[in-house]
Image 1 (tube, one colour):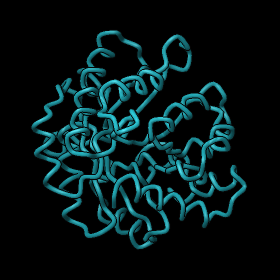
Image 2 (cartoon, one colour):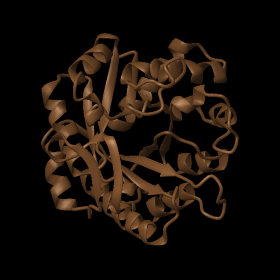
Image 3 (cartoon, helix red, strand yellow):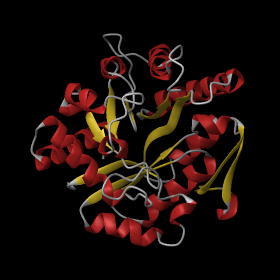
Image 4 (cartoon, one colour):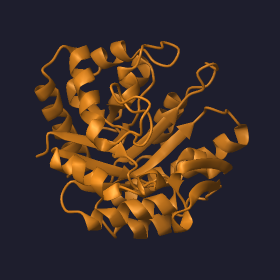
Length: 292
């Protein structure tokens, strides 16, 4: 069992093209496992293929990020066809194509999928919901958890992506014998309220914290200290979202999975717990959720 696990990284992205093997090796040599996240078909395929290049400790998810359901999004860090920078073509989620991809490597979850209300464009939101429902259905079929991306618009409190994701999972997930959603999941880079966190836990969704918990508090985004204190340790995970949002003391540089230890340390500080104890419990949580 590793000491740390970064449950949401993108070392499959173009940002790591020049030194990908060194970054991954650095993490593995420092007792840190990695789950690389698919954001559309190209990056999902790359993440899956990478699981076959490395032994134990490198895993993948496959899915369509909500912002990639519409055209025009551009990210120079992300991987497109032939290794070029990625420009969203407005992908329509093809369940059968992704289902086939799931059999080609160590795939542990569906996503990242969910809802992103940062721009609050009604046409985009409807496309996001359609793609998310299809990915819930695929998770039902494959018995895999969901890797959730959920983001609100911080100035518009009339919409709540966390509540809408909660409602869609309840509606479209298969249910168990007591009527709760059959599929589980994790909300990566959590930035919701205590109420959002409690609703997610009610349906078996873990809460994962990322680099911003180490930054100067901004209550307009999230009261991380309160949320972390209120979240039970057996429902907490940690992620870097590499190459983005590097934690202190690496803020302003390209993030990488090795830095997940700084996030785990901050969680331990906030909860007043031993860092080794928190690291151990997070790995137990991850192994339970992703069956690794």
